[in-house]
Length: 85
Ligand SMILES: [Zn+2]
Image (cartoon, rainbow, N blue to C red):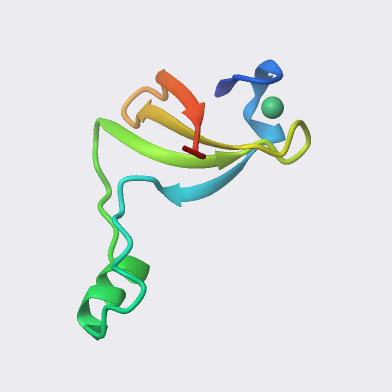
């Protein structure tokens, strides 16, 4: 079972969280007119076997958005931090 250490609420079951996607994807500039850049940002995703940075929201807790660094091979979590800067 996947358990995530929320910086606000402590160790919680993953059922309390919602997966929010790849945190390593870089959003194009707001005024970037290149449709290919937006296509890649919205639709193209890697499926790595290993370390992956992911957005998770603690929906039944503090509702904070988090960045979780997780190893997709064994679901071990290496770090958790707030997504906000
Ligand atoms: Zn929380």
